Amino acid sequence: MSTVIFDLDGTLVDTAKDLMIAGNSTFEELNWKIRLREGVDEGIAIQGGRAMINYGLSSESLSADIEFMASTYQMLLSHYDLTIDANSYVYDGIAQCLNRLELAGWNIGLCTNKPQNQANELLLRMKIRHFFKSFIGADTVGVAKPNPKPLLTSIAEAGGKPDDSVLVGDTKTDRDTALAAGVKSILVRYGHGALIHDLDELQPDCLVSTPDELFDSLERLFFD
Image 1 (cartoon, rainbow, N blue to C red):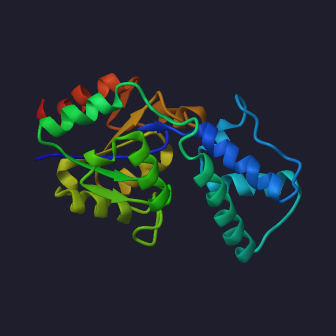
Image 2 (spheres, helix red, strand yellow):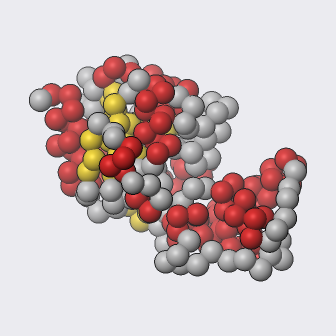
């Protein structure tokens, strides 16, 4: 039985706007002037909370120690909790793909750099949490992607083995994680990663343009 592990943000769910809102709320609480602009700064937001904080620090010409970063990250998560599903949505075709994979007997897991609690809550609200046999967040095993440990843990907990598994993601981080773990990779062009990477240059095992292509692409990787 083959195993597919999905990234979350930019692969299953478009979360960019709610991430930007959380980032801007954090900047406002810190009395920083900088704001993330819709239609311009999604490439910053999709890299996560710490990337947004670092962008704010750079824009305000400030530096920060570890304690400030940790406390500000928790502040951002608190703001994100308030807007977590206000504007986010599952990409068209994802639920159907997950259902087809489940019916076809695939092991399905998740490996995300979003904190586990927020990832779990988001997918519960998106009504697709039940598809995942394993669920690994940025803080679940003590390290995050591109370290291979979260991916390998997700594969094992889903009931799979690395040589019969594939990671579906949208960024260089996902491709690098798969390479480090010795796992096949699919990158999606419809997600966030295409805003900041040339996906063709990353040379994953497969590229797909829409969620509707995912199931057949996954089947071809292992069964053609």
